[in-house]
Amino acid sequence: MRFTDEQIIGILAEHEAGVKCADLCRKHGMTVPEAKRLKTLEDENTKLKKLLAGQMPDLAPMKELVSKKW
Image (cartoon, rainbow, N blue to C red; front, side):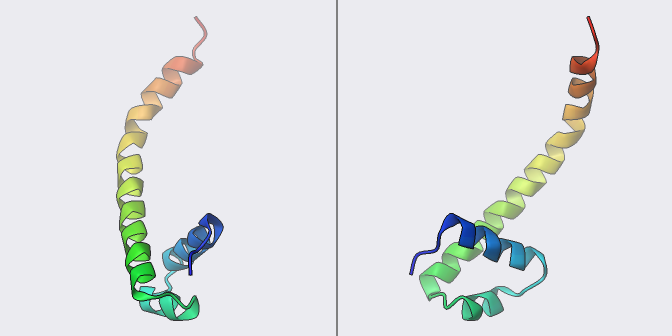
């Protein structure tokens, strides 16, 4: 069974809310390959959030500079 993008986003949101991966797999009837894919997506999501958080302080001075009138 393949999941739509919306379903994957919903499952990831459930995980972020604290639902364990094994529970999500049972709830959504995921097979082992799908569970592995979900785990990979969770890991990628975590890395992207860390990357974004690391870039946010760098963006603040740029936003201030752009907002100034020349």
